[in-house]
Image (cartoon, rainbow, N blue to C red; front, side):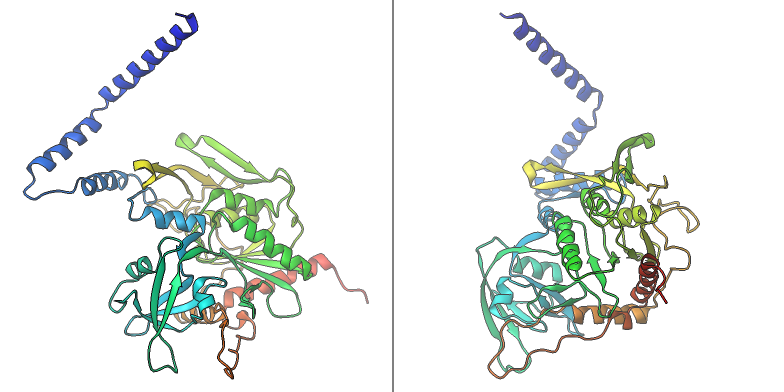
Amino acid sequence: MPRRTLWLILATVVVSVACYERADRNPYGRWLSEALAIIDRYYVEPVDEQQLFEGALDGMVSRLDTYSAYLPSSQAPQFKEAIDQQYGGIGIEVSLEGDDKQLTVMSPLVGTPAYKAGVRAGDQIVAIDGRKTAKRNLNEIVGWLRGREGEPVTISVEREGHDEPIDFKLVRARIKIDSVLGDLRQRDGSWNFMLPGEEKIGYLRINSFGESTVEEMHRALAWLTKRDCQGVILDMRNNPGGLLDAAEQVCDMFLPRGAVIVTTRGRDERIRNEARASGRGEYQDLPLVVLVNDRSASAAEIVAACLQDHGRAAVVGNRTWGKGTVQNMISLEGGRSLLKLTIANYWRPSGKNIHRFESSTEQDEWGVRPDPGLEVKLDDKQISELVEQRRLRDVVPPADLSPGEPEAELPTGSPTEFDPQLLRAVEVLREEIAAVDGPAAA
């Protein structure tokens, strides 16, 4: 036998023995297996082994921290869809509206089966494949609407001006979810990324950080550049976060070479990784303002903190959520379920920890605070008005109009009329643009 082969066999034996001894020293796995077997054999009612397994994992992970979680096969696909920014469906945004909680189309997505078939904002979906939607929860209904690409589905809608429900026979397609939005839809359904007015101020709403966010940002900024944009507001209010890599690449667009974007630290605060700007960003001199609120978290906080610490953007709004932990997604059961496990913390370029711990107080350092003088609080009435007006501005104009039917009127005016936080951001950005331009010649 060749000596090399003998050494490989000996090495394999040593590793196998080491793994066996380690498992033997940690008896919890064996005890858990024994408990499952006892429950399966002696419990008074028949048990579902999959449910026992899921319950054991959920209980185990729930002892760790708020953001670690076990996602069973019933939840893992939806999580993956949110990160991938795509799913199988018909392409509508829905909500339960009114006192009777009627399932209502908020807006069809441009180019999707629902949009092409003529489904409109305001349509009330009363049945899906013959199943009534009344008194059903939203998650259950969304499950009926989504499915495999190429599968048929029929929705029945009630529409103002029609006596009888209208049936739409649709075929599910791959639906892409935009994460970078503008202020208003144009007639063709595309976004207008410029705010109304003479200043040529760009307005980018980043709703999350997914697989396509960086590409969407490049397209939106190129669109603005062609129209001689003078400065941009990055609105990350209500952005729950997403992919760390996407947040780093967005920061890289605006920073000089070598600038620290974010540091991740693991156990004992040891540095796992330090991301720095490449210097290849095309918008290093573009005036910026960032909008955040108390629902801006994780990756959104990374971007806000980075741009604030380097003096690249003023931060306007409210103090952010304070989620400064990194989660890895680990596939289990052959990819059917997921383990979302916290492995590190985010640290700002300034060396401060973003995370808000259970023991943290309002006086402690966590999250991202607005710059001095730029905190803008909204009361409940202002928030409700903002949500309603934003809903109206996000509607896609109908693709099909009956003969003689007038085109729907698109919203007009500036969103600053109902959004005090955005108004303050515009004021700050005007000052930045004026400072770049310098004093006018007499």
